[in-house]
Image: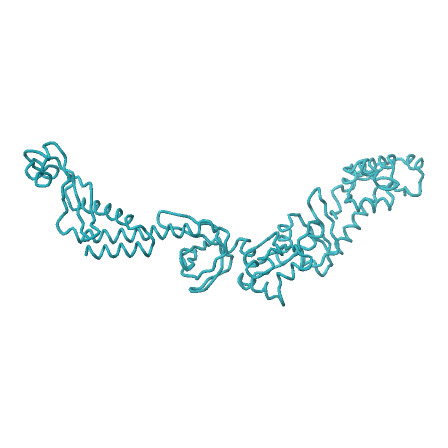
Amino acid sequence: MGKEVVDILNRISLEKNIPFNTLKEALEAALISASKKMLHPDVNVVEAEFDEQTGEFRVYADMEVVDVVEDEHVEISLEEARTHVQDVQIGEELSVDVTPPNFGRIAAQSAKQVITQRIREAEREVIYDKYKNRAGDLVAGTVLRYERGNVIIDLGNAEAVLPSKEQPMGERYRYGERIKAVIVDIQKTSKDAQIVLSRTTPLLVVKLFEQEVAEIRDGIVSIRLVAREPGKRSKIAVLSSDNDVDPVGACVGMKGSRVQMVVQELRGERIDIIEYSDDKRRFVANSLKPANIESVEYDESRNRALLVVRDEELALAIGKNGLNAKLATELTGVQIDIISESQLSERVRKAKQELTRIPSLREAWIDSLLSQGIIKLEDVIAAGVDELTKVEDLDVEAARRILEEARLLLEGKELQTSQAEDQSPEEAEADVLQPAEATNPSEESPAI
């Protein structure tokens, strides 16, 4: 049996790339532990020996050399000690062979356990070393089984786990099915090295396109931004470094062949491919594809954009449960508001109706104020004299009069209607502001 253990250790050392001495040291440590279970507790086992040539197992304990033995578990007589070492003296310690009877069977069992443990540890180290720097890589594997909602994937030379939280809602996997995922973590525990995968990360979309699109692999086309709702819809913003290469067309492929391969791997998840632009207005308009945008108003200070679409495309622009607009906002980093042309017309009508309550405001001035986003009495007051006088032909005196009238209206006072256009400044100043029945100041026209 001992010789068989030697052969096994040699084979394992070669196949698993584990040094033979490492296996031998581990085995000898196991022999010490096993022998202690078979010997008296007082016996001080200090060493085990495994003969590489014969495969024999021996264990040794330290004993004190005495003239008369009182405790045979810790003492040895001088006479017996000198059969081992001739010049040994009383009081010295001697390493004595205390190998239990039939120890070979126990030793062989220990050898098996040590070999199994070392193989497991070696495999753990090999797997960890191979994958520890591969976070973010795309891998393909075969579904082995489910464990409490997690899916165990066979990567060929290692097993990986796809946690339930990293699985898109609604996806189910069959035994033997081949799937692709991204490595998001590699963890080394006392038992094994665990490779953690994800199919919800936006990086999966990027890696799948890299696999399918040669222009991306070659660096001609780059994926600048990704927004994703796993299992439902993704938007990617792409840019080409070559004016002769259409980035969107490259990702779509001939008759949609490339994007369809990605969609198929993502189990029908919709993919919108958008051309990236540093021009925020243009990029925001592109982000609502496939809806066509009629106009874009972008407020840089508030990082907010108002997009106008045709009435029949409003639902398309917003998307089911608002998903298209939500992903467009995530992709661009701009807060997006979407209205239809008819809604815009109604807002403009109400805004004009609101501003025409100020008697001194000419119609031409109202149009100019609306274009600046000033649509309510509060907006007029917030604008102040400096902003109002930026309107063509609107001087400081007229601006102050307009502000005063707006304040009085907000206080619930109705003004005498008079067209500023038909009055001279002297006539306008002569107008007497008369309090009227309180109106409802809370009625405000919605923002454009």
